[in-house]
Picture 1 (cartoon, rainbow, N blue to C red):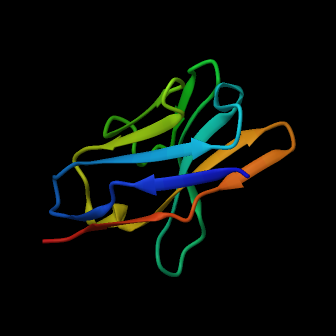
Picture 2: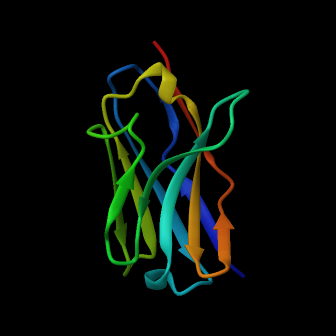
Length: 115
């Protein structure tokens, strides 16, 4: 059974940082492309960042230069380092694992940026 468990969310002031983690189990992690998506209230889920099995990364324009995605295949974990957070970054952040026709999602972790 595949599980993706996110952690690291919370309340942070504008300009602050958080490190999100997504621990995977039940899959051959190194084969999977991993990604972070987010969904703000009343909005559609949107791509934040992805990292391929090769290590190639991709970012939404809104987070380039502020967020960094990375992965540790030995720990079966993907990370999202979020810096210079803005109120508009407030959302539930979801972890995604994708390989061929396999597509899995975590339950999400809330990030709230507010003073």
